[in-house]
Amino acid sequence: MYVCICKGITEKQVQEAVTSRSSNNPKEILKSLGIGSDCGTCVEDAVKTLIEQQSCAPFEMKDSSNNS
Image (tube, rainbow, N blue to C red):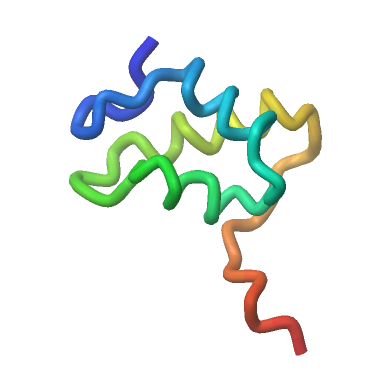
């Protein structure tokens, strides 16, 4: 199933990105795939796919680079 029509990103590609990347930061994963960079309607479905793949509680989409 397509998650992002604008970029042609499938659910399987999102799942593979989760398992193949060293980062588990959802914002970084979505950005690396280009999800949400055009119309943005895919972001909600992509986040749901990330949550399902990571088998964890919902997370906040925050920039982790500002750790104070």
